[in-house]
Length: 311
Image 1 (cartoon, rainbow, N blue to C red):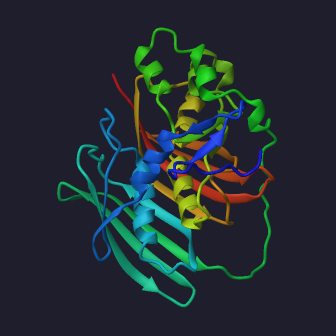
Image 2 (cartoon, one colour):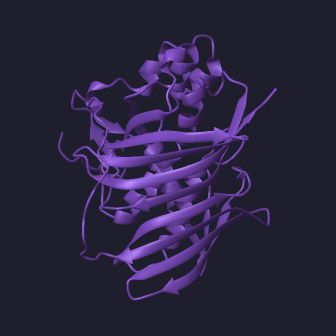
């Protein structure tokens, strides 16, 4: 399939197998969430989706914070790393204010610090570094895992349909439109919960934003940051045969770090290869690499999460 096209209204679209136009309303909503309101110099305001959720999705806060930082950086500099801490749960019913601090503007590197605030308290902090594109030595020691092509794999909805049984809340959640299309090349946590032989410390997931996106490099980095928080904690659970909604466990991201190595497009398939090397003391570590379909390493991710057993 060639590069998808945009609809007249600016809503991202692709054509389905019968040639009909498909409008991804969930992605349109996400792009609207990332279009922050500037309320003062280096101060931005973001909102959350109108959903029945108890706390703001961590990937959303990270993505919005990165947008805020990027709005204060010259266009010739691309983000190459971020380091973030999730301090308090976000309240989805009120806006989030992002305060950007300009720590450094050098000849080739720019550094920003972002604090996300709700109810007068910091809920999230991020340091992000931007770099002018330069020539340098190149190598890639890591090799992308050999997994089936995404087009040959079923969707998450198709795989989960046989497992849900009488879980109406999970069925409702799964049926909601999503901005990110994901296809697993490894067991789901729900599958490993029912079959101990499927337990593993590794997860491979193909993902893409099923739409025609602008060429803005910051947007593609921001969307990768948003997607990076979806499945990392699941890799920790998969090691123990645990699953959300089935096991007595609660989790939350504690910190999150990303390094962006090469330009990429988030509307092309990316393979997110993840593993969990350790968990103990109600915490777990997970790390991942994102590869293009041709095997280029474009993003590295590390996250620590709280994984707490409940009664």
